[in-house]
Image 1: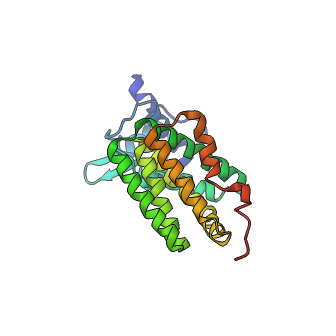
Image 2 (image 1 turned 135 degrees about the vertical axis):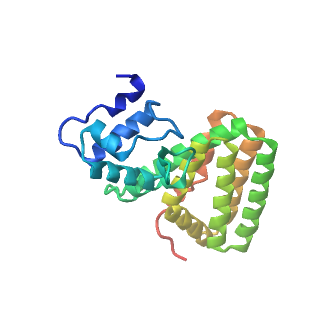
Image 3 (image 1 turned 90 degrees about the vertical axis):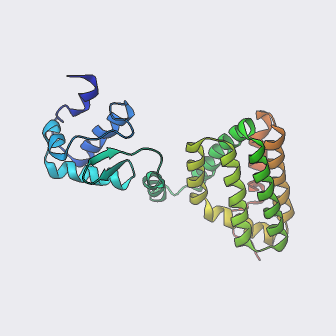
Length: 243
């Protein structure tokens, strides 16, 4: 059997929808199916896999909901081309529903992703990226002076989105968006508590340092410390503070 059709071999043992999903996913990972490729019909897939047509239909339905496949009537079912926000949703829900509920795990995830994004931004930021980041920093400074936590949160989000765009890596940018969603409560609590403690000026300074790091292309040895300092964990910032 030709290599590019190897994924169509029969599925052994009891067939489940997940097995069909795994087979199609493996075919995409191994480039046997490429973006824009048309899948065989449900009947052909069912026959090749040795499973029921309803099983194939359900697997395709799930992969379509994830943005991996797209149905074009009347042409058929195709492997999607390009990234869709729907692809992030399964990971988002998987982390949300993780029963470990570890704040430490989220903190470590945030630090790792932020550091990777900052490293790329330092290396790859263009003049237009620096200008946008400067604009976002000015907007954040204005909101910090005004003192509304929700508006500060949005300005902070815009600033970090601008850093992610400056990294010029779509996957990092998307995962950065995901991490900011997952840590939104943590970040909002930080802003409120920093305001209650009278330390919004320290937030401004931390963001100024990040901006300078990207603009001046600071070396890698400084980046981790800059990020961790900007989380303000030294103040037990994730604990509830008195207003």
